[in-house]
Image (cartoon, rainbow, N blue to C red; front, side, top):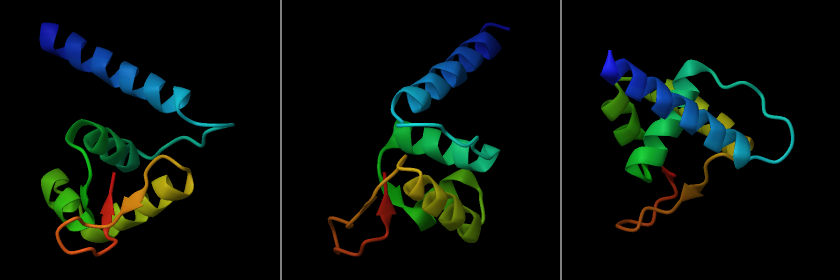
Length: 90
């Protein structure tokens, strides 16, 4: 029971941080998009393929959600420091 309470508290705090860091009205996030956003917040920037593998999601699902999150201003794409490709997100 303690673990469930801790995880719910963590979830609510994440949701509050997302709300506080956005300008204007925020469209509700799909569950997968919320999961991606929370994972990036916890783990830091990573390539879409690595993100898909870590979350056990299809790469096209991750790509679609990352594009939506980027359009909403919740994530940014960054060049990969190792090879310069602009495929990472964070």
